[in-house]
Amino acid sequence: MITVHAEQLSVIKRSISLSKGEEVCGLFLGSGLLPNSVMVTKVVPTSNVAKRERHKRFEIDPVIRLQLERDTRNLPIGIVGHYHTHPGGEAVPSEIDLASAHEPNLFWLIIGTSGDTMKDIKAWSIDPIKGKFINLELSII
Ligand SMILES: [Zn+2]
Image (cartoon, rainbow, N blue to C red; front, side, top):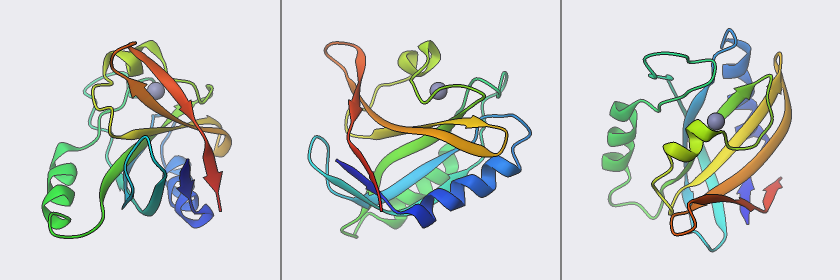
């Protein structure tokens, strides 16, 4: 199970309201390791650095990711997952998502939006052997 606090989602909601229809993305710091329970302790929004079609693609800023890995090296928390939105879409992984999923230890939070509203939120992980996403239990507290 993935546990996320409602206040952490409001950080994402703020990014959505500034996104102009592009996918927004970022990283989650927390504790626990898949397939066991994961608890998110912090949301770190990053720029979507995809070079094109940012309304249907995302790429997390690698500089921020590296910095977080460095900052948490000696801490009991680390990068546990990431999130992105599907503007006007469902919280289901796209073909593009499947093609870029290579890290089975990170969970994916996908948020289907309608305007500034988060209408659907689902957590996923990639099964690298079957080559498909698995829906994870999500608890918003
Ligand atoms: Zn996607």
